[in-house]
Length: 366
Image (cartoon, rainbow, N blue to C red; front, side, top):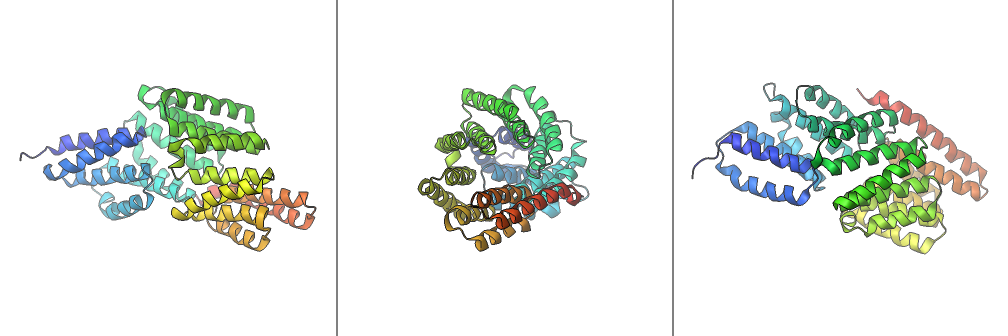
């Protein structure tokens, strides 16, 4: 059989990566299968094989096979970072490593990898790759509540994605990151407009997963405004979309729905969603949501402050200070309503401490 030129295979991998960035899972899976079939017939070229493994690690992130992605990145690390390795290969290694750490919820580690990647990106003339980078950095900064950094990068990404017709879903995702930052900045009406626009656009293009994310985020926005019935409505809308239910993100939606229902004094339904979320969190070995679920269960159902505090410490150990602040405020308000001023005061203080730690997170960024 005639050997396939490695340049041709390199172009096929390029095309595959473009589809991955468009979040087209079915087409990306199909293209990966085709590339795997033809790789054994390619002219020998270690750089192209390395390139395939890097893009495959990104594909595994897309398909939520996070451990496989991390193992693959570890396997190719030494080869990817050799002195004579191509600049783009090194960029991809650091960028995808950042994405992997993000999915592990190690947000400061993710940003540090992204910053190293940025030094390589300067030499890459690809507007969409730069937009993808700014989008990922915007999301990471949002997670540590560096809202103005996040907005800056989200707006850069949005401008670039807007200029290309085939990246409508990325445009929608950027709009949602901007809206999430608006929620943190108490610009609730602006956030709601952005989310509704994102949901309408996603629905019109048939992007069901992005539509579900819009519903989920609009639920968060309403919960922050103490509009609990509206919040529950949008969390349910998100969960009703099959693409959402099948994703690991459904853990978050079921957790938030349970939390809102507990606040609405609907314990039986809240308990049902708590159990569903916990089952999925256990399946995915998601320690963060196991801890968050334990906190709401101990607060609203078991009334067990000792176990609640242990779960809170798990979040602190992972430097998830925005989650600690959010949940501590919920605990404080709950006990304030119960007339227990000692416990309430303790958790208001814990929330203030957590917010101080959020401000200090930038010091951990090298």
